[in-house]
Figure 1 (cartoon, rainbow, N blue to C red):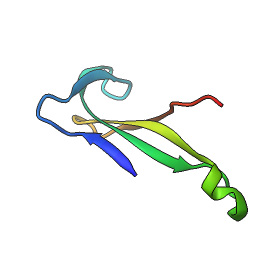
Figure 2 (figure 1 turned 45 degrees about the vertical axis):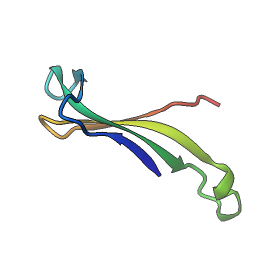
Figure 3 (figure 1 turned 60 degrees about the vertical axis):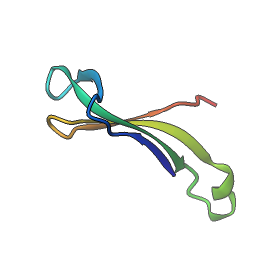
Length: 66
């Protein structure tokens, strides 16, 4: 599951690869963290995913530090 902002007025954020502020596409994804089959449904965590619209570099930041 993901929620995405891909409008023409994308968010401007710092890109480590471009070494400057660039437009980014931003989405929220629920990612499964557990490798164990029996616990998978309880191990989903939200991640903020950003993708640089100039170079394509992607970063994922876990939003919940439980």
